[in-house]
Length: 202
Image 1 (cartoon, rainbow, N blue to C red):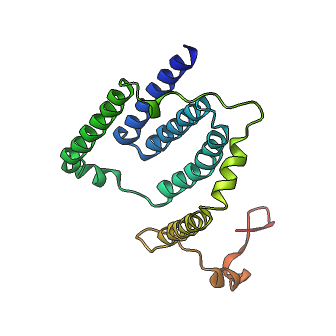
Image 2: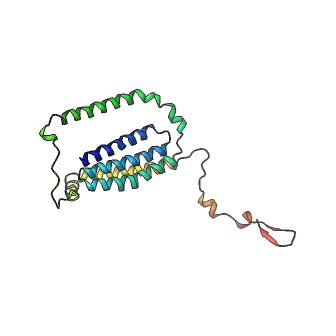
Image 3: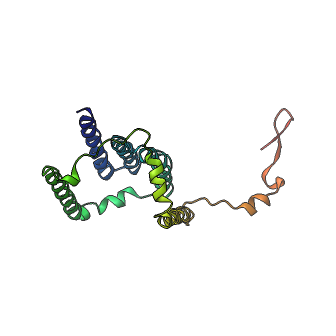
């Protein structure tokens, strides 16, 4: 009973956070809503006794990926007003996708109500069971190439983000290292005398 109540509580907050991600007008607010959605998803993983996935979701996505998202949002200098102009253009497609998702959820709920054997609630894991060991044995044997491919894709995403931030745009101050090194003191410092006769640098 308590597990069911916790599931509905976490799921409700997760739905609210997901709506906030797509409905928020500020990109930073959307990223913070996404952080909340990740936390609530981690709680649902804990209810399913998948502790490793819950911890990875918090550490990797909230601790690393979301920080990268915030850096990208802040450094790309996104024109929010221009992005809002085309918001209503995608509204019909968004409503169709939302309707399909609602129908799929209803379909799953209907199947659960049929008491089918393959949709019954699984038994709790025995004492001493480690889902981390089981996940590692599958991830680094059967899916090792897919795991390496995902790491390469993430590396390409990092390089692409750096490339986007280094592009030339109006009003951007670019550091010229050679010009800074070749600066002359006489061109920057001037000695002047005040009324008291003491010399000061300006």
